[in-house]
Image (tube, rainbow, N blue to C red):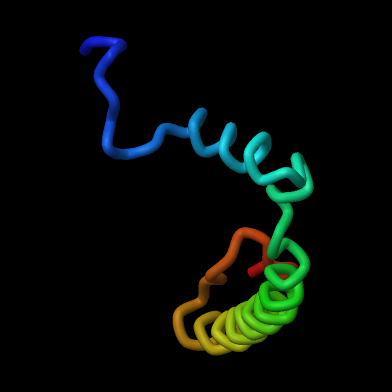
Length: 79
């Protein structure tokens, strides 16, 4: 591929250059939206992981009684 040819899609280096140098805010522009991302994802992740572990705990109780095995290697219960 010729080095003179221009790709219609900007490369990673071009995007970084555009954000860092041409925007005027430097490194600060890379973190735009970071706070709102945390505000959205932290509560969502905490709810999802809490539900996951609660459901896994209840399934372990049911499956241990019915089939005699535990579903997770991290389980406290030993058979």
